[in-house]
Amino acid sequence: MESDVDATMLACIAFFYPNLQSMEIFTSGTSVNRITGDKLSRLISEKRSLTSLKMEECCNLGGLIFSSTSLSTLLLSDLHSLSKMVFNCPHLKEVYLDFSQQENDRTDLTTIVNGLGISCPKLQNILIASVRLSHAVVLALTASNLRGLQMLSLVLGSKITDASVAAIASSYSNLELLDLSGSSISDSGIEMICNVFLETLLKLLLALCPNITSSGIQFAASQLPRLELMECGKTICDPNLEISNEEGNDSDLQRTPNSKLHLIYQKLIIKHIRLKKLSLWGCSGLDALYLNCPQLVDLNINSCRNLHSERLLLQCPNLESVHASGCQDNDGQDHSESGLPDGSKRVRSPYLFSPQPRDEENKCSRARKRHCAVIST
Image 1 (cartoon, helix red, strand yellow):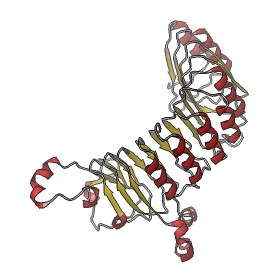
Image 2 (tube, one colour):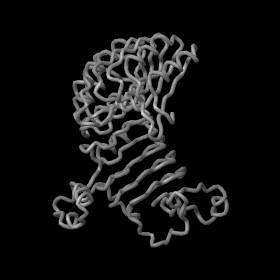
Image 3 (cartoon, helix red, strand yellow):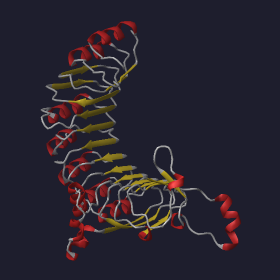
Image 4 (cartoon, helix red, strand yellow):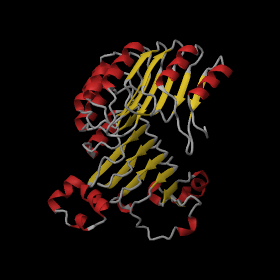
């Protein structure tokens, strides 16, 4: 929408589309979403054919009472200080609730999640992004016993701990995707995840989890045979480098005592036959990476500032893209001529991105060789 969205526009939509099945409201530029919770709740209850609702800039809703026998997908972003959020949607399968990250948000997530689980028994996918996520919220969710839950994403909850993982594992044993990015879980939590979701988990996202080490990441890769995507960005961090970046002073890194180096610099070794995408962006404490992943097609090592090319070994014949912005560049080559309009660069993949063919196979292998794009800035 280029203009403001308000109750009048919502009434027009309801009038001109009596059999409305799907509605998406996205603002752009300076437009503002002024729709209130009571008007939106009324639309949902009256439109018996509405199956999907997606709306952003939901900061003016105030409170919501959703009652619909047809709604199956609900996505609301920029939620803030909801006074109430009541669900009566027996056929709801997907819910995505993205809250603002303002510290003065007063939303009672525990009550909302408790009602969500009780009134929406067919839920398969849940995503909640909020700084107010906590262990109490997780307990309220797991008490609902949603038997068909396949995807659970609880993002930005720094108060989510290993105890929360234990509650999730004991209640939902068939998850295919688990996202606990921004939580405080540790390697012990990863061990619980591996013990329970051994045969089902396809995607594991643990970005911005400061208590996770390379040992935990390696353990997950070795114990989850069906894993296709692993997101571990900003987990293995060099605290001195983070401080020096904030202060604009590199001297702190140079003063790091040798006795603490083993706590900062870590190596990561992953061997996995199904992994297709691995993200390690921002892992400034990672100084060695060895991958043997024949199905890997995408690797993100952006801002892995201590990772040097001589300590990077990739045995990944199907690798197509390596995102390496902000990494050490020790090949001594000038890549300025290969710059793209967006400012990124694509350089020829070095030998370590694929095994070297034997001399007698050189001619044939060149014809079959896959090209890998190394994208940096």
